[in-house]
Length: 133
Image (cartoon, rainbow, N blue to C red):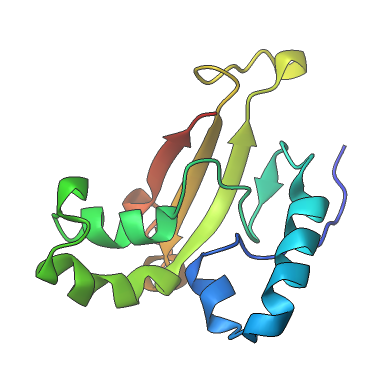
């Protein structure tokens, strides 16, 4: 069953960091984020993912330019990280016993695409990432 939902950006994602939440309010907002996402193991089309292991947008930005993730903190990676916000979630596919889909140990699959590739409808440039608990 499809239903509309409103989910905040992942805590620590480029979108979250762009909010520039003041330090005195950050703990309250962080508590709210964890409260609204704690049961969010679901399928999603667009919007913000429920990330399990960390920042996939930055991962996409680095890997799409040929960098290995072991270079995460390199000077080359720092130059590319600014492009992370241009990576958009197309689809989140959760493990779902009812649908006969199990990714690893109740993992999620995430399909990401760069904003420019989406505009040009170059879906062959999409990237799939699996994250697990």
